[in-house]
Image (cartoon, rainbow, N blue to C red):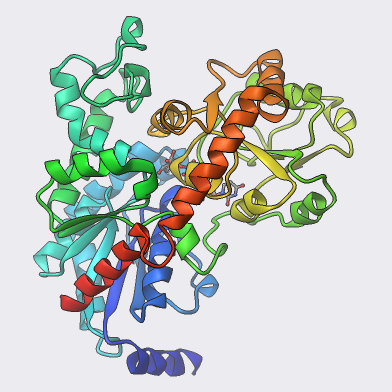
Length: 461
Ligand code: UDX
């Protein structure tokens, strides 16, 4: 059948194969599949390993081969949707069984495929790294967050030793002099309850990288030269490459969404004035309570600005699809659009969009910079505070909306971004940064050279 023809084709065209195994969350899946796409474009065959949890849809990527791996995540942990406990549970289950090793062994033994050179894994998959290593398969890590973030992972023991962590309420604005320009509040945020869990996850991520033969970071020399150098000084791995933003090197802008994209917003954007629309999205994981949702809604309504707002069905946990406040629809009629999930990269690239109110997940941050858009930043957790700090204090391409969302504060921030001088300055800087990042993606640019080096390395394995 079709599969046979396709596999025959693969054998003819590709000399080598790479395996990739993303962490099953949207912000991790996207960059891994983008990297896979870039490598495929360089003549490598690709096999994607994925968990049953948030399983990927092979039909969306007919050019790749897909293999499902038993993940052993207990149903209640999976249902919580909570990323740190899921990472730990999944690794524990994988380490307790030989299932991953068996799947890897059968993938390697498949002689209908070109020989596998290596396995790209998410840094949170130490169990998979160990299984690969037992089979003699080299691993490389794709870090889907910033270089600053990974540098912070490496520094986590030092941050404890030097008293910055666990964070004390009175020291939130104390500069972390070892990792400028971060302050205590910008570090990986942990409540005392999950502190030990986070510590464990970060230590294991560092170990995964140390056990691997190389590290690819989805960032750009134009954004994080010093941070990349810091990682290179700390790590004894063959290479640390800045090969991003990967979504700009990958030929496909869509195809890895776990949720269905509502494309009706594209026609709506077509009808708006250039640069007038504020795009609002808090990523794939962040949540808020009903009061916060209502404040965001009225802040947007009262701003008088056109907006496109992504309200995921699970944005307010426990509710059966978040209800927007009474009277909101009427107040924003013709000026505001609410959708459950957007084709975000296309939205950000649309001429009508002039600003991004974001939670500063690293992908959203990179995608915003890539389109030269200034940001209002409302970080929720993990690396997002750190990304906000870079947006504000290093690149100057946006500013933080601090504290809980509150309608008057929101309206003020939107005015500032879309109408006032501070927004204008951020917009100008965002366009300059966009150019600098884009030049790394051109022939002879650092990100393209990084991909060349990576492909050369893979071919030598
Ligand atoms: C979080 C972290 O903060 C991030 O830095 C970490 O690496 C992964 O976990 P997330 O909430 O998923 O990430 O945000 P982000 O990193 O921005 O990734 C979200 C992805 O989903 C982006 O690629 C974005 O384009 C896409 N997206 C988002 C959509 O396609 N449609 C939407 O409506 C919203």
